[in-house]
Length: 181
Image (tube, rainbow, N blue to C red):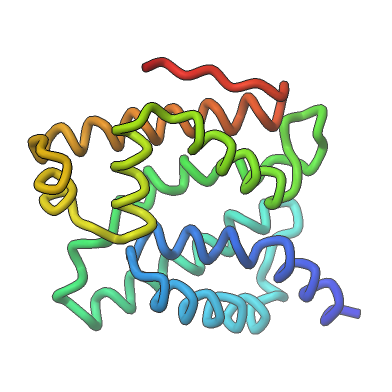
């Protein structure tokens, strides 16, 4: 019975863990490898899990530790590790109860909301997010390709992430999204 429950945990949180790890490592291959490792560790430590806590937060904690360890082993890639607290805050919305009235819901609903919100981003913000997260380009490369300063890339990415967070929250709660351009 415990295996069936863990299978459900895996299905519900697999994509979120992979996305989280990609955010930390900026490498899909590493993120996919570490995702498998996260669930192996989680399965082994299942008896240590506090059922009053969020499963997603627990899995992200394991993922963050594994990512840090992996990036320490490859020191040259260490620069890609973002501040875990900022990322934890960004992913906290996934820990809400799966009650649509409370703004929660399954990962798939939030993923669909993300796609809808990406389409609503202003052009340069969408381009920066796409180049940074999907193609894995560094800010310097993005700035050169868009003909803007590197600092502008950081500002656009920050605004885009804030807009995406607000939009996803609005879509999952009220079915609407509002952007501040």
